[in-house]
Every structure is written in structure tokens, then in C-alpha cells.
Length: 126
Figure 1 (cartoon, rainbow, N blue to C red):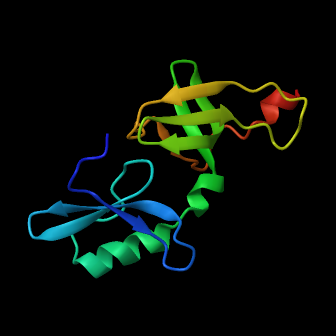
Figure 2: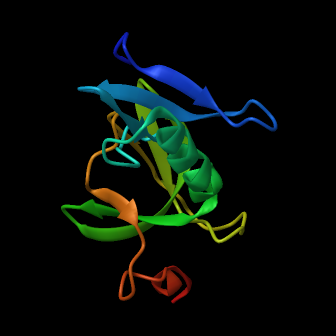
């Protein structure tokens, strides 16, 4: 649940919701849609700029989900304040089996941007 003192922030151009700005003392912290801090404490306008710099493009990126079975290459399917839904990457193919994982919101640290050396998914194609 979103705390009552968090203010939704929308991109100025298209009014798309891109996160929240929450108070921290007499400053403000940008929070992205995954519920993660996108900035440290800033002035209000700087917090808005931090969210706008992040935008939504990260939703289209490939991510890594750390599981007990190892690291998985995943894509974000849905983000709401109730859950984060990810799916193993299908590489755009209709015949690749996928698995969905429902994660809590805010997204846990086990969901992270891909890093060099993460699985590339080629093991799916043998």
C-alpha cells in the first residue's frame, strides 16, 4: 500500500505515472514504480527531475531474478502497488516455455538489472 504522504508523479508530456515523491525531513525522495528509491533526499524539483530521468524505459529492459535454482533472465510483465509480475524471457518466440513469478511490492533485491556475466538465455535453445 502506498503511504498517504507519497505524491504520485506523472510525466509532463503524456501524464503517464512514473513514480512517487515522498517526504524525508524537509527534503524529498523520488521513488520509482518498483517502490525503489530513485534518488536521495533532494529539493522537490530535483526529485521530479530524477523520476523523469529514469522514466519508464527500464520496464522494457531484461532483468535478472535471483532464485534458489540460480539466476534467471526475466522481463517485467506488470507492476502495481500490490505485486510485481515477471516472466522468464521468451526472446519474442511463441514456442519458448516461460514461467511467471509473482513478487511482492516493493520489488525485492532479488530482482535486479542485468549485469555482465548474467545468464544470457541461450541455454533455452540448446
